[in-house]
Length: 441
Image (cartoon, rainbow, N blue to C red; front, side):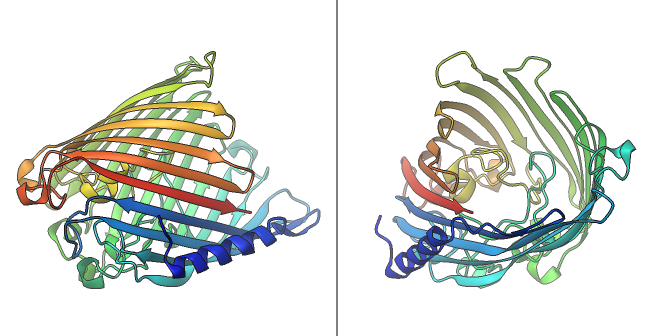
């Protein structure tokens, strides 16, 4: 797909800059201090042969590009006469969307922005509290990404609407697909406990994302970590929302929302086995909601290319609020189906989703995968976003700096936009393809 002139200029300039400075990661180091320059470039070329209802979109196709560069400094200082450390980071993100804008017009291709991404300071205890384990107390504050568990409820603040959706009310600068910024605006976080036994997290998070009603929330977890097994409890309470961004019933319902969850993962003492699940329930002003999943996988370690096969069932009740759920442990978690999760629905509510996943590792730097999704809307009076999707992807770590991620998605809705779905024009098979490049140093 051809790049627009502006995107060629941005991508070329950023690649040139990164290539020239690929060995400039560590700026300073001695026995107590480290100072790093951190740069990540990402650029995506995307095409969809169908458009979807959301912004001011018409039937047809969309071709667009998204790119960002995150750049800044990070530092660690070891305190005198101790192995406890103070750490911190500061970085900006410059990003843009080019071409037609995305296939649902959450962005229109005109978005360009530079904004603060992360700015935080923290302290790790080292061996100061032996009963808690190494670095058993970790306290930080500022703007940072904060995940909980495998991201089923919270995995950062990455939704990036653009100018065209809702008249620009939720504009955060675009890059709807890439999510150039994923940090919460303000946080206070305490991690208590090491990497085994009992541990806990206490969090206060404040979003500056208008699409998330600029929520403030508190959260706590209690986990037990043993060899091959983790079980955990999570409690989340929305403390505040900004009313002017709560423009529909679902967003207004976030005020005082409470969410609890029980989760676990284990290999049951069998190395190739992966079992994972979570059950979340919500107390909302409009009633009670729930979501859950169960997943099982097996790695064939003795076979060539170590095939991995897994299956998962996920269920979201009609008005469940997915809060800050997001991409965590690879494709399909928790962005289920590249076309469905971004454009066609069901958007983590009112849905039952079955997934089959198969992947191969021909080389330590190369992963090939295929995923099948079957989506069923539960209450079709709220919209029928039922359909099926097949995604083919490749994850190639070309070298220590460069990663390529191409994907081809084939999606078949049961209904078009004219009959209660979201695909404009027809309910025929649609194709979506993307190539994403990541460059880090």
